[in-house]
Length: 166
Length: 166
Image 1 (cartoon, rainbow over the protein chains, first blue to last red):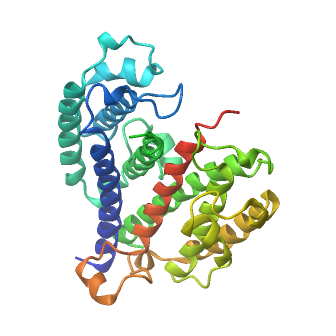
Image 2: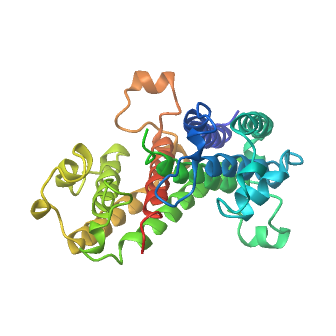
């Protein structure tokens, strides 16, 4: 291994570690919550914890095809947790805490398994929603950019869940 | 330039871009705010925007020595915006919106100038608050880990500022 290879691999390992740290923080927030606790809002009139839980799973499920790992597992999460605002889909049609926990585990097992197999060259390769032409113009539109962006996305919403009163 | 050197440089450039994107989002939130607007709370009884503005500047100022760039510019921000909770220091002793804007610019000019000079090897080198012994045990405790952590830190609080009513 050359020094340069080592540098790229270390940098990629750092980015993966940062992703997993945020993911673990989110898991600690959501996994213990009951259906009742998931009804709490992050602030008066704002998203419920239930919405953010489903939102994370849906966004991370979409990373599976976006990064070229495979087909996504739960496209049914798009309508209630990505396309629509909270409270648009009626509660009876939303997954339960137990459903969400199962989906969280499924999605992150599949996703993190895929992420763990990428080489540094894979990380700087293009993701599936950028054209060859656009990627040639902007090589920053690579897989790693997706991971870094989703890492900040977790932190963004965790800043909100931190406001929920016990 | 070898392929491997290129990979390390690209990956580092991605991390720097992610940092600057979050920083720019924060700047867009805070720069236009008047002293009166900075008094708004992110949620009832929670931190004011004023606190988060000073908090960001203080945290980023501390990155200057932490990353070995130089000495920090505004250690006076520690007491009101890091060591203490919001509203502990009385308002008359806090910097104004104009003061904060000036300090924001000073700190980020100095910091980003330093960050821009780091090579990939510098990024995977240790930061100044980890011992040689601890760094040998965990080479992830490098400069890049600090940058990734502070990038998520910005996102975390921006998720909160997004809850403030216009």
